[in-house]
Each structure stands twice: as C-alpha cells, then as structure tokens.
Amino acid sequence: MMITDAIATPDTTTPDTTTPNTTSAPGLAARVTELRQIVHPEVSDIEPYLRDPEPEVRRAALHVLIDNASGGDSPRGLGDTLAWALADQDEQVRRFAAEALRDLPEVFFGDKGVRGLLLVSSRGRDRLAREAAAALLAVLTEGAGELYEQGLHDGETNVRVQAVLGLVALRAAGAVSEAADDPAREVRVAVAEGLARLADPAGLPVLEHLLADHDPVVRMAALDAAAELGLPEPLEGRVITSIAHAGWQVRKRAALALAQATPDVAVQPLLHALRDRIVDVRRAAVQSLEQWASERPEVVTALTEALADPDPGVQTQARWALA
Figure 1 (cartoon, rainbow, N blue to C red):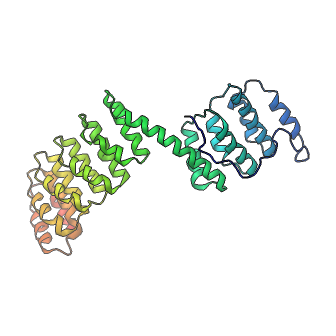
Figure 2: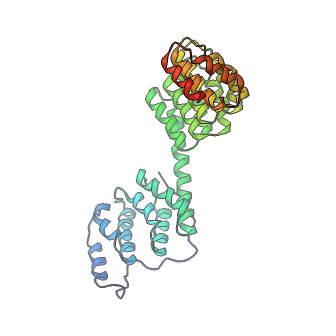
Figure 3: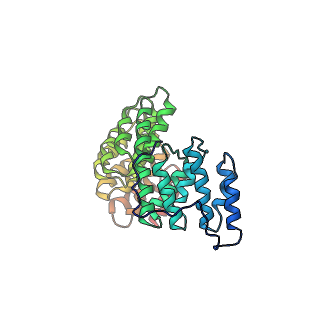
C-alpha cells in the first residue's frame, strides 16, 4: 500500500537520532555502534534494539531500518514495526516513526501493523500519533475497499464470500448490500450475517429482501440476522410470513426470531406455530411465548393446552413456562 501525504508534518523538528546521548546509560553508545554495523538488516535482527529501555537506541534501530528502506532495501515487516513505534513511550520515537511513514515511498502493513494502527488511532499517546495512524488507516481502508468490491465480481464463489467478509470488516454496509442478489447462496448468507454484525439501518431493506429469498438456507440466515438485530419493525412482516413457510427449519427460525418482537406482533403467529406438525417448531413457539405467560391470558391458555402435546419435550417446556 503506497502512502503519500496522508500524514501531516510534525510542527517540531525531531532531534538527530544518529548521535546518542552517551550520558544516558552505560553501554548506550556501544549498542548504537553495533546497530550501525548490521548489513542489510531484517526486522528480526533489529528487534532486540527496538525493545531497548533507552529511547536513543530505539530511535537508532528505526533509523537503520529506514536508511536501508530509503536505499531500496526495505526489510519485510517494516510497516508493522513503524506502526507499533507510533505507540512508543518516547515522544521523539513516535515522531520519528510518523515522519518515516510519511516520507517512505511504499510501506506495506500486515495484520499486526493494522492492529497497531487501530490501537494508536483510538488510544495513542499524543495527537500526532493518533492522527498519523488514523490517516494511514483511511488510506488502507480505501485501497482495501476497492479490492474487495472488485472481488464481488470474481468468478469463484469463495472469493466473493471473502470479499463480503472483508467489506464487513471495513464496515462498508453499502458495498455489502450490493451482493444481496449474488447467484450463490453462500454469498447471500454472508451478506445477511454481515448486515447483522454491522447493525446499520441502511441495511434493513436488504435484509427484508433476503427474508423472502427463494433459498431456505438464505432465509434462515436472514431470520437469524433479524433476531440478532432485535427484529426491527420493517422486518416484522417478513418474519411473520415465514411462520407459514414450506420448510420447517424456516418456520422454526421464524418462531425463535419472534421472541424479539412485541407481544402484539408475535403472540398470534406463535399461537399458530404451536399447532405446527413438526415438533421442533412447536418447541420454538413455546420457548418464545414463555416470556408472556404471566401477562397474556391467551398465552396461558395455549401453553396449558400444550401440556397435552404428543411430544414429551413440548409438554415439559410448557410446564416450565407456566411454573
């Protein structure tokens, strides 16, 4: 990922990092000299110096890595190292890392570096570090978002699923919604699950659409998503309709989802589900109705009748609900 002018220039000049303050600690100059003698360093070679208690040594370690990167010999993991250096205890180390991230022509971040940027952007020790991390995350998000959106049109189903998951991680609800009509049910399931995680009101029309999907697996995923979101009002009608779906698994999920609705919305469809020919649907209906057993007479009546259900499990659940 190329970083250009995303990071603002610090308003103070960073002191020279190549000349250590030899009065700071015994052996400091020797450790800096050791650093300068490392040829073509990898991050693993420099790591002990990056953990040195003296900030002068940590700055010198960064300087060695950056010098090599500027000369075209960028070590693997440099971006991650600089990202975490933004969280250093020493202000000058943080500023040096921010300047390097601004000036280097290309810096790449792995998962470790992204985690560091997220941490610094939300809990950084100073404004400069937070702003630098936030700017880098914005650049990364934009670039990754474009790649994931391209992935939505890939010929491989698994790639499109991964693209949806990536867009969910970026909280790009609009782009996630674009995959709601994907021909593969695995992708549409990922959309439903992703919209539940995002909890964005803009995604409700898409979930409503998925609640009417022709594939029962997709409808079940959408029902679970609706329940996870607390069954928002725009989705109530589709969930109620699902109580009469041909697939019993869909009917069961609908009965469970109705537990999140108000009793005025949920009770009548659930009373209907109590008469379902499939025992799992009846059990789900009892489970959802239990919360209203003490306040709705029609629920008490229905649960009392369920004590005579041919399935012992339904009888037991009804007995517990009435207790």
